[in-house]
Length: 311
Image 1 (tube, rainbow, N blue to C red):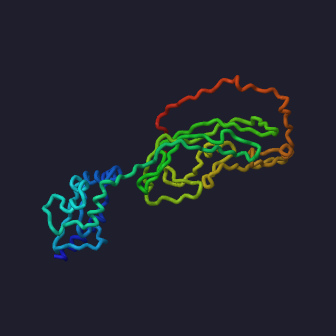
Image 2 (tube, rainbow, N blue to C red):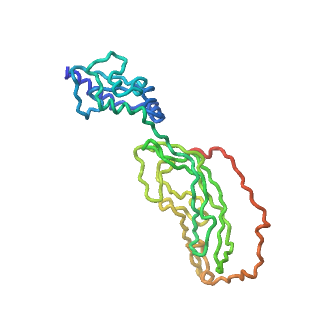
Image 3 (cartoon, rainbow, N blue to C red):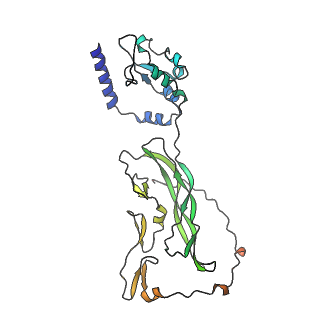
C-alpha cells in the first residue's frame, strides 16, 4: 500500500512540475482581491501528506489519505474548531483530518487582502538642464511639472512603464547677471519634455538587465537614459551620446586663425574675438519697459488623445 501511495505522489508531483500554469489562471490570481475570491473561483486542495510537509504531523490512524477540496463558503467563514469538521464533497474520512497548523493559518486567509498596482500618472518636477557653464547665466524656471508614470507593481517581475507618451514644448528664459542686482535678458528657449499619457505594468521577462546610474528600464525592456528630455533638445552641431546619456559637441576642423569652442558655441570662433572683452552697456541709461502694460497670457487646457502607442 505504501509503495502504491509513493508511486502516486511521485507521478502527481511530476505532472505538477511539468504543466505550465494557464494564462487565465494567472490573470485571476493577479486580479483577485482576497483568498476568499480565489477559493470561490478555483479548485484548491488540501493534501494531508503534501500540504505543509515540512511540519511534523501526528495522525491517530494509518491508511490512505485523499485530498480535501477547500470550499470558500464553509471554510474561510468558520472558526478553527469548525474547520476540523467542515463538509467536503466526498464523505469525511477520519484520517483526512487537517493538521492544526494548516487549519489555524487558513482560518486567517479570509482577512488577507491583496494590494493593487500603484503604477499611475503623477505630476513630477523635471529640472531644466543648463548647458551654459557660465556661472553668471541663470535659467527660469529651473523646472517644470509634467505628468509621468510612477509607482510599483504587485508582481515582482513587472515594472511600471509609460504606455503612451507625447512631447510638449515649454518656454525657458535665459538671463545673464551683469552686477548691481541687475540681469540682462540673454535669450528665450523652447525646452522639449516627455509627458506620459497612460501607464501600465508589464513583465520584461527573466533577463531584465541591471541598469547603471542615470539609466532605467525603458518600454523596450532595455536600459535607457533617464534624462530623455535632454535628448530631444540635443540639436544643431550637438549629438546625443546614448552610452553616456549626454549631449556632446561634434568636433569639426577649424580654419587657420580659428579655434573650436566646445563649451559654449560648439563652433569655430576667431581667436582674437573670443579673447576680446565685451563692452557692457550702461544699463542705468537704458529706457525701462513697463511689463504691466503687456497682455497677460491665459492658461489654455489642452485635451488630447492617449498619445503614441508602442512606447
